[in-house]
Length: 274
Image 1 (tube, rainbow, N blue to C red):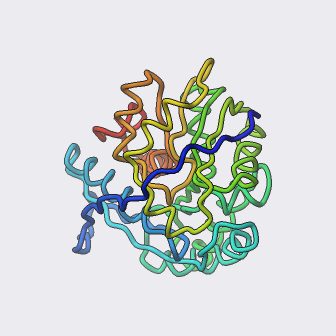
Image 2: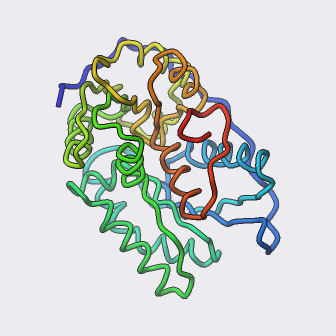
Protein backbone atom coordinates (compact mmCIF):
# COMPACT_ATOMS: atom_id res chain seq x y z
CA UNK A 1 0.00 0.00 0.00
CA UNK A 2 1.29 3.48 -0.87
CA UNK A 3 2.12 5.59 2.17
CA UNK A 4 -0.42 8.23 3.15
CA UNK A 5 0.12 11.90 2.45
CA UNK A 6 -1.13 14.91 4.38
CA UNK A 7 -2.53 17.82 2.32
CA UNK A 8 -1.95 21.47 3.02
CA UNK A 9 -4.16 22.71 5.86
CA UNK A 10 -7.36 24.54 4.95
CA UNK A 11 -10.35 26.06 6.73
CA UNK A 12 -12.62 23.69 8.60
CA UNK A 13 -16.04 25.11 7.82
CA UNK A 14 -19.23 23.52 9.05
CA UNK A 15 -21.10 21.53 6.44
CA UNK A 16 -24.69 22.49 5.75
CA UNK A 17 -27.16 20.38 7.72
CA UNK A 18 -29.96 18.65 5.84
CA UNK A 19 -33.51 18.01 6.83
CA UNK A 20 -34.68 14.73 8.35
CA UNK A 21 -38.14 13.26 8.77
CA UNK A 22 -39.71 14.71 11.91
CA UNK A 23 -42.85 12.55 12.00
CA UNK A 24 -43.10 8.82 12.60
CA UNK A 25 -43.79 6.71 9.54
CA UNK A 26 -47.19 5.01 9.51
CA UNK A 27 -47.36 1.26 9.44
CA UNK A 28 -47.62 -0.12 5.93
CA UNK A 29 -45.79 -1.39 2.89
CA UNK A 30 -44.83 2.13 1.79
CA UNK A 31 -42.51 2.87 4.72
CA UNK A 32 -39.33 1.42 6.25
CA UNK A 33 -37.56 1.97 9.55
CA UNK A 34 -33.76 2.21 9.54
CA UNK A 35 -31.81 1.79 12.78
CA UNK A 36 -28.43 3.45 13.19
CA UNK A 37 -25.67 2.67 15.67
CA UNK A 38 -23.33 5.65 15.74
CA UNK A 39 -20.52 7.03 17.93
CA UNK A 40 -21.83 9.51 20.46
CA UNK A 41 -19.86 12.31 18.78
CA UNK A 42 -21.04 11.49 15.25
CA UNK A 43 -22.88 14.39 13.60
CA UNK A 44 -22.78 13.35 9.94
CA UNK A 45 -24.51 10.00 9.40
CA UNK A 46 -27.77 11.41 10.76
CA UNK A 47 -27.61 14.14 8.11
CA UNK A 48 -26.12 12.43 5.05
CA UNK A 49 -28.16 9.21 5.20
CA UNK A 50 -31.51 10.97 5.68
CA UNK A 51 -30.65 13.28 2.78
CA UNK A 52 -29.84 10.33 0.54
CA UNK A 53 -33.06 8.59 1.49
CA UNK A 54 -35.05 11.82 1.05
CA UNK A 55 -33.93 11.78 -2.58
CA UNK A 56 -34.85 8.10 -2.82
CA UNK A 57 -38.31 8.93 -1.47
CA UNK A 58 -38.74 11.71 -4.03
CA UNK A 59 -38.03 9.25 -6.81
CA UNK A 60 -40.01 6.27 -5.52
CA UNK A 61 -42.63 7.49 -3.05
CA UNK A 62 -41.37 5.06 -0.40
CA UNK A 63 -40.79 6.64 3.00
CA UNK A 64 -37.90 6.04 5.41
CA UNK A 65 -37.44 7.03 9.04
CA UNK A 66 -34.27 6.82 11.17
CA UNK A 67 -33.86 5.64 14.75
CA UNK A 68 -30.47 5.87 16.48
CA UNK A 69 -28.53 4.35 19.34
CA UNK A 70 -25.27 6.01 20.41
CA UNK A 71 -22.07 4.60 21.90
CA UNK A 72 -19.48 6.74 23.66
CA UNK A 73 -16.56 7.85 21.47
CA UNK A 74 -14.89 11.26 21.29
CA UNK A 75 -11.30 10.76 20.15
CA UNK A 76 -10.54 8.63 17.11
CA UNK A 77 -7.94 6.37 18.72
CA UNK A 78 -7.66 2.62 19.07
CA UNK A 79 -8.65 2.52 22.74
CA UNK A 80 -11.92 4.42 22.30
CA UNK A 81 -12.74 2.57 19.09
CA UNK A 82 -12.39 -0.84 20.73
CA UNK A 83 -14.46 0.32 23.70
CA UNK A 84 -17.23 1.33 21.31
CA UNK A 85 -17.19 -2.10 19.68
CA UNK A 86 -17.81 -3.68 23.07
CA UNK A 87 -21.13 -1.80 23.29
CA UNK A 88 -22.40 -2.89 19.87
CA UNK A 89 -24.72 -5.61 21.19
CA UNK A 90 -26.28 -3.29 23.80
CA UNK A 91 -26.86 -0.65 21.13
CA UNK A 92 -28.40 -3.24 18.81
CA UNK A 93 -30.79 -4.31 21.54
CA UNK A 94 -31.80 -0.70 22.19
CA UNK A 95 -32.35 0.29 18.57
CA UNK A 96 -34.19 -2.95 17.78
CA UNK A 97 -36.83 -1.91 20.33
CA UNK A 98 -38.07 0.41 17.55
CA UNK A 99 -38.77 -2.70 15.43
CA UNK A 100 -36.50 -1.47 12.66
CA UNK A 101 -36.23 -3.25 9.32
CA UNK A 102 -32.45 -2.89 9.00
CA UNK A 103 -29.65 -1.82 11.34
CA UNK A 104 -26.62 0.08 10.05
CA UNK A 105 -23.53 -0.02 12.27
CA UNK A 106 -22.08 3.33 11.30
CA UNK A 107 -18.50 3.46 12.53
CA UNK A 108 -16.15 2.12 9.88
CA UNK A 109 -12.86 2.53 11.71
CA UNK A 110 -14.13 1.02 14.99
CA UNK A 111 -14.76 -2.24 13.16
CA UNK A 112 -11.59 -2.14 11.07
CA UNK A 113 -9.47 -1.57 14.19
CA UNK A 114 -10.32 -5.14 15.25
CA UNK A 115 -8.38 -6.62 12.33
CA UNK A 116 -9.08 -8.01 8.85
CA UNK A 117 -12.54 -9.41 8.27
CA UNK A 118 -13.92 -8.01 11.53
CA UNK A 119 -17.05 -6.63 9.83
CA UNK A 120 -18.46 -10.13 9.49
CA UNK A 121 -18.22 -10.78 13.24
CA UNK A 122 -19.58 -7.33 14.14
CA UNK A 123 -22.58 -7.75 11.85
CA UNK A 124 -23.30 -11.17 13.37
CA UNK A 125 -23.09 -9.82 16.94
CA UNK A 126 -25.60 -7.09 16.11
CA UNK A 127 -27.94 -9.47 14.27
CA UNK A 128 -27.86 -11.94 17.16
CA UNK A 129 -28.64 -9.20 19.71
CA UNK A 130 -31.60 -7.90 17.71
CA UNK A 131 -32.94 -11.41 17.23
CA UNK A 132 -32.56 -12.22 20.93
CA UNK A 133 -34.53 -9.06 21.69
CA UNK A 134 -37.44 -10.34 19.64
CA UNK A 135 -36.94 -7.93 16.73
CA UNK A 136 -34.72 -9.54 14.08
CA UNK A 137 -33.41 -7.16 11.42
CA UNK A 138 -31.06 -7.13 8.47
CA UNK A 139 -27.63 -5.75 9.46
CA UNK A 140 -25.13 -3.66 7.52
CA UNK A 141 -21.84 -2.25 8.78
CA UNK A 142 -20.10 0.68 7.13
CA UNK A 143 -16.84 -1.28 7.10
CA UNK A 144 -18.41 -4.27 5.40
CA UNK A 145 -20.45 -2.08 3.06
CA UNK A 146 -17.39 -0.24 1.81
CA UNK A 147 -15.35 -3.31 0.90
CA UNK A 148 -18.31 -5.25 -0.49
CA UNK A 149 -19.43 -2.30 -2.60
CA UNK A 150 -15.95 -1.79 -4.03
CA UNK A 151 -15.83 -5.46 -4.98
CA UNK A 152 -19.34 -5.29 -6.43
CA UNK A 153 -18.42 -2.46 -8.81
CA UNK A 154 -15.20 -4.27 -9.79
CA UNK A 155 -12.82 -1.78 -8.16
CA UNK A 156 -9.68 -3.79 -7.48
CA UNK A 157 -7.51 -0.66 -7.20
CA UNK A 158 -8.56 2.53 -5.40
CA UNK A 159 -7.27 5.84 -4.10
CA UNK A 160 -8.78 7.16 -0.90
CA UNK A 161 -9.14 10.11 1.50
CA UNK A 162 -9.46 9.70 5.27
CA UNK A 163 -9.68 12.18 8.16
CA UNK A 164 -7.64 9.88 10.41
CA UNK A 165 -4.17 10.15 11.85
CA UNK A 166 -1.42 8.36 9.90
CA UNK A 167 -1.45 5.06 11.86
CA UNK A 168 -5.23 4.64 11.52
CA UNK A 169 -5.07 5.55 7.84
CA UNK A 170 -2.50 2.80 7.30
CA UNK A 171 -4.67 0.40 9.25
CA UNK A 172 -7.73 1.21 7.10
CA UNK A 173 -5.64 0.72 3.98
CA UNK A 174 -4.37 -2.63 5.21
CA UNK A 175 -7.91 -3.74 6.06
CA UNK A 176 -9.12 -2.88 2.57
CA UNK A 177 -6.12 -4.60 1.01
CA UNK A 178 -6.82 -7.74 3.05
CA UNK A 179 -10.14 -7.83 1.18
CA UNK A 180 -8.27 -8.02 -2.13
CA UNK A 181 -8.46 -4.32 -3.06
CA UNK A 182 -5.17 -2.48 -3.66
CA UNK A 183 -4.90 1.03 -2.19
CA UNK A 184 -2.80 3.00 -4.67
CA UNK A 185 -2.76 6.21 -2.65
CA UNK A 186 -4.19 7.46 0.64
CA UNK A 187 -4.42 11.03 1.90
CA UNK A 188 -4.73 11.42 5.68
CA UNK A 189 -6.17 14.71 6.97
CA UNK A 190 -4.91 13.84 10.49
CA UNK A 191 -7.82 15.11 12.59
CA UNK A 192 -8.01 13.21 15.91
CA UNK A 193 -11.14 14.83 17.41
CA UNK A 194 -14.34 13.31 16.06
CA UNK A 195 -16.43 16.48 16.43
CA UNK A 196 -13.81 18.36 14.43
CA UNK A 197 -13.96 15.69 11.73
CA UNK A 198 -17.68 16.40 11.41
CA UNK A 199 -16.91 20.09 10.82
CA UNK A 200 -14.52 19.51 7.92
CA UNK A 201 -15.59 21.37 4.80
CA UNK A 202 -16.61 19.00 1.98
CA UNK A 203 -15.87 21.81 -0.50
CA UNK A 204 -12.17 21.00 0.01
CA UNK A 205 -12.56 17.44 -1.20
CA UNK A 206 -12.48 18.06 -4.97
CA UNK A 207 -9.06 19.73 -4.67
CA UNK A 208 -7.78 16.93 -2.43
CA UNK A 209 -9.12 14.30 -4.84
CA UNK A 210 -7.37 15.97 -7.78
CA UNK A 211 -4.08 15.47 -5.95
CA UNK A 212 -4.55 11.73 -5.46
CA UNK A 213 -2.27 9.43 -7.41
CA UNK A 214 -4.93 7.75 -9.53
CA UNK A 215 -3.05 5.99 -12.32
CA UNK A 216 -4.63 2.55 -12.61
CA UNK A 217 -7.35 3.36 -10.06
CA UNK A 218 -10.83 2.00 -10.74
CA UNK A 219 -12.60 4.06 -8.05
CA UNK A 220 -12.02 6.85 -5.55
CA UNK A 221 -13.03 6.47 -1.90
CA UNK A 222 -13.73 10.11 -1.19
CA UNK A 223 -14.39 9.60 2.52
CA UNK A 224 -13.31 6.39 4.26
CA UNK A 225 -15.17 7.61 7.34
CA UNK A 226 -18.86 8.04 8.10
CA UNK A 227 -18.17 11.19 10.13
CA UNK A 228 -16.30 13.16 7.45
CA UNK A 229 -18.85 15.13 5.37
CA UNK A 230 -18.55 14.30 1.69
CA UNK A 231 -21.98 14.08 0.07
CA UNK A 232 -21.95 17.59 -1.47
CA UNK A 233 -18.71 16.73 -3.31
CA UNK A 234 -19.41 13.20 -4.56
CA UNK A 235 -21.02 14.03 -7.90
CA UNK A 236 -18.57 16.84 -8.68
CA UNK A 237 -15.53 14.64 -8.05
CA UNK A 238 -16.99 11.76 -10.05
CA UNK A 239 -17.76 14.07 -12.99
CA UNK A 240 -14.30 15.67 -12.88
CA UNK A 241 -12.22 12.51 -12.51
CA UNK A 242 -14.33 10.16 -14.61
CA UNK A 243 -14.07 7.43 -11.96
CA UNK A 244 -16.75 5.96 -9.71
CA UNK A 245 -16.74 7.77 -6.36
CA UNK A 246 -17.77 5.87 -3.26
CA UNK A 247 -17.88 7.00 0.36
CA UNK A 248 -18.50 5.14 3.59
CA UNK A 249 -21.92 6.80 3.71
CA UNK A 250 -22.97 6.04 0.12
CA UNK A 251 -21.78 2.44 0.43
CA UNK A 252 -23.80 2.08 3.64
CA UNK A 253 -26.89 3.61 2.02
CA UNK A 254 -26.51 1.31 -0.98
CA UNK A 255 -26.40 -1.80 1.22
CA UNK A 256 -29.32 -0.60 3.35
CA UNK A 257 -31.40 -0.23 0.19
CA UNK A 258 -30.23 -3.64 -1.00
CA UNK A 259 -31.15 -5.22 2.35
CA UNK A 260 -34.62 -3.72 2.01
CA UNK A 261 -34.95 -5.02 -1.53
CA UNK A 262 -35.07 -1.50 -2.98
CA UNK A 263 -33.33 -0.35 -6.15
CA UNK A 264 -31.29 2.87 -5.70
CA UNK A 265 -32.83 5.89 -7.47
CA UNK A 266 -30.82 8.70 -5.86
CA UNK A 267 -29.59 11.64 -7.92
CA UNK A 268 -26.48 13.75 -7.38
CA UNK A 269 -24.58 11.18 -5.32
CA UNK A 270 -22.58 9.26 -7.92
CA UNK A 271 -23.42 6.40 -10.24
CA UNK A 272 -23.54 3.87 -7.38
CA UNK A 273 -26.68 5.51 -5.98
CA UNK A 274 -28.46 6.11 -9.28
